[in-house]
Length: 222
Image (cartoon, rainbow, N blue to C red; front, side, top):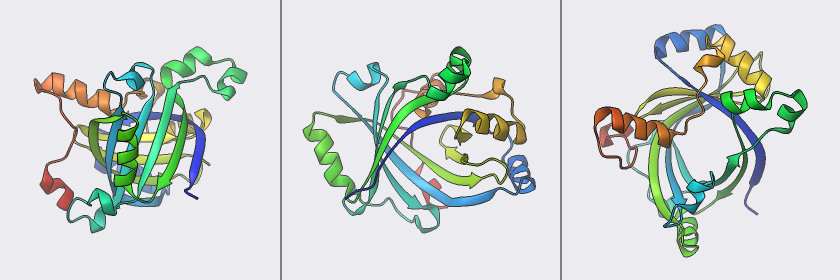
């Protein structure tokens, strides 16, 4: 049986202005690398009328490959993948108990998430197409994942993307707030944007027609 996971995802993004300074701070905090630098190739699927996007839903097929072994793009037919469904923004049960719904809605991205590991990405892509879902957006990033010894259950994910470098903090509200403070950020720095929206904003600033958010081929050979 494929592995299936459901959770309520609570996360934020933080823009990284100085990668070297961030690395020094992670070392001072004794951050532990729990996943090496990994290349992610992501494809979002939707109906021809973009019904999922209008409802705030997402279907994503992700292929991962260790950056250290990345010499060429992995053929989809040979690749394992992760299929993800994300629902529209929700108010966390913990948030309701804390009575801070409006504050959390504005500062945190909170969604229901289901994930399943699949052994053949091409077969899963064929299933999605048979269900009248089509690829609508592709994006890449390199991700390195850390854990902080003083903040349990929190993932610190350093993402290198074609439109900049970001941290994603995923965990509990209290854990995210604590980790952000330790890393030198405040709530005013929190971002709930998707990488798609960040890419579209970058295209508008640069006067470019949007397409897919991909690295130039030479980037993936480093």
